[in-house]
Length: 328
Image (cartoon, rainbow, N blue to C red; front, side, top):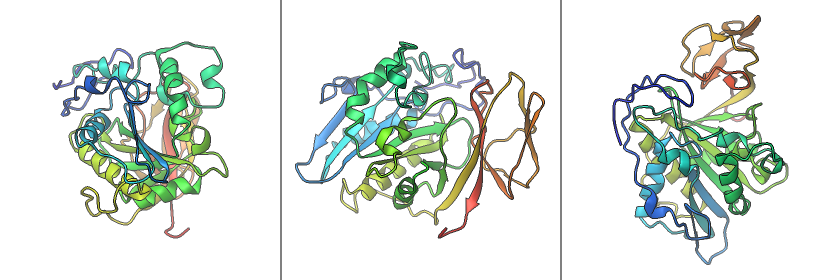
């Protein structure tokens, strides 16, 4: 599908301000999977090595990942060592995608990427479409050693890799080579992301994961970023040959350390300006207000990471980061 995408997202209440440039591919040929889980595909090389996985569509309205995995499936990529998995995650939300309301199908009932804290999937609080799908894929996810989770962003800003709080995550991002901007953070108060699930973020684990934000959700350039980052990831993990695929040259990586994820407390959160992301603010600059609370830049400089348009209580409004000197 394609279209102007100027409608209103009924699930999120956001007006779409960007054109829909990506035609989401038909994924029904991949519905059966090959390991007993719908839309999850795994191949074993027969040689020693880690279980490497690339996932897309944790959010149903982020089609660049679907295009990228469709490309790999059509190319019949197979691992040179270890195991390789490709996973299409929130298919129900993806299948509901409407280019006239492209923000309406980010999820069906709740954000799939906030469900992964210990015990959350078994607490019995809500039996949502996302919880049921998460339970379905969890046994497979437990076997994954190295994960790349493909995402995109609300605004047209520079692509980035979001690494976890463990140094091994940022190191994997560096070996990928692209996107060159790496953001290290500890997640959201609202809930744990799949990227941080269990061994991916635990002390002493050999597992790790990174999440890439490839650009604005529906811009065609996000597909090129997703393919390049996936190529870098597959090379870095050793699951393909070191010269597999095309990988454009990238500048030296820059690491940004998040010091605070600003969680919204009231219905009256407002940004002081129309921030879009990667603004570098002087210490003390007013970023926004949350009722009577002022949110100001805590350090020099303060880099704004992915300011949100979903300004609801409990959500993250923006992440505040500072550059980490090379070699630190």
